[in-house]
Image 1: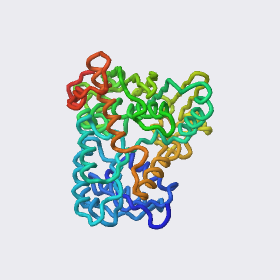
Image 2: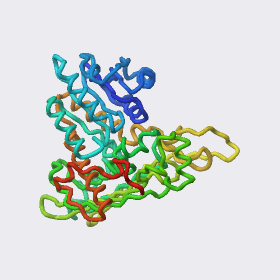
Image 3: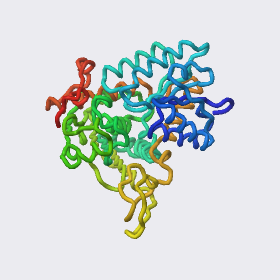
Image 4: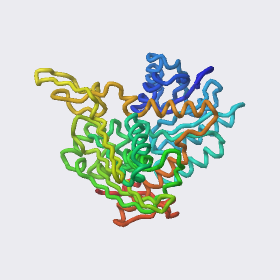
Length: 413
């Protein structure tokens, strides 16, 4: 991008929002112009980080509507908790209506909403505003994922045929903030929090480069969810102590494990399959993504813990707990991988570069709210399959009104 930078406003100032700000160090032509969060203190902290990293001198706003209405802000990034996203979107639409020139774009972090019905409302509001949208799914912008897909489709598929199986898994020891653990606020547990990554990454890998999303039609979804660790009395007590009394997994648990298989039909009538698993019950070095793509005579695989750098500390090195080596770090001693640049390694740089450039051009990015809606449809099918123990057709219109038991606080593991 050249000329005047794209000035973005960020709603929400938590862990994920910090990744986006850190990513902008490597994205030209973008500055953070505004921040709004639940507390003014957290918004000021994020604005301070942007200033420290020289990616913008942000104004702290009291509400999302005021930030969206401000002519000093060109586009909005929604990073607030899941249960606030629909109200924030309504506020952005109101603020946009007060502008002499409309916003250039609205981006929303995954998942788009807690339920398919809420996701449909998000899309309707964006259409009402007439503003281009982006669905912030970082995993398909991981450099290794992008490069792997490009090589296999360029060298393998033309000679042997298209890939037919994609697998994606994401695991760690649990979220950072209390609200993530509360199904009524997130819309579920590990499935909605993390399998949105796996479902979309696997689908994207199986989609021919340059082909539209509609070239793959999801026809069957089968899923299972479970509470493997955090409902055990010892760990439920630990969770309540660390996250506060609102998080009571003896009474209102969310799933800490999920697996799902989705069957797609290609435009040529071939069936291809994605497999995804996720958990908050993995104990290892830290956050682990594993991704595979398989075709007739070729395959690719990667793990985000294969970083090329590791360090070792003996038990004589005493350190405070932290995450200075990698996200969701579980130890301070022993042999551990190090992620030198997490914002780039996990795809945040790539997605912010792509979406900011598209907004600056007046275009809709590669992933829009429509794509987030389709992910929400698959998630709804997963939850229904897990609850009812059967294969679900994700095209079933009844999913629009389906609300998982875990999001209602009635699931018991």
